[in-house]
Amino acid sequence: MINKIRENGLTSQHMYIAGFASIGLSMASWLLSRAAGDVGMGRADHWGIFIGQWAPTFFTLGIALRIEESMDGKHDMMGKSKTDMDSRMARNARMGSPA
Image 1 (spheres, rainbow, N blue to C red):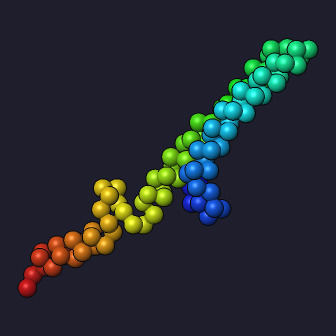
Image 2: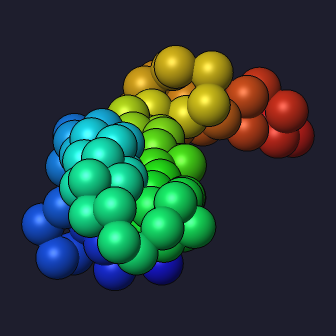
Image 3: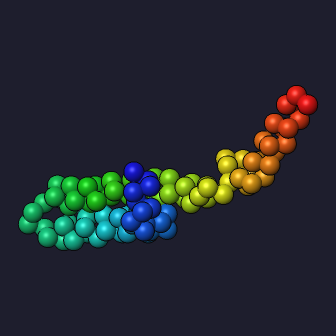
């Protein structure tokens, strides 16, 4: 799923922006629904909570995309470059093989 999101050109920054926008929209929706006094407080709470629940999803996707962006085939989990790891593996294979 994360790869599909990246293929569509979305980045972690986009997801973080969407998360903060969701928080702002949640507050605006709650305030606007509350101002329409004839519909009651239940509707205001419903819309505010509904939109506010999107924020954690956007932030989680942002974190997952950030991890993918940092790895991007250049680094492993320890932060070492892929070519460095490949050369170490080749050297260890030569040292361990019989002469």
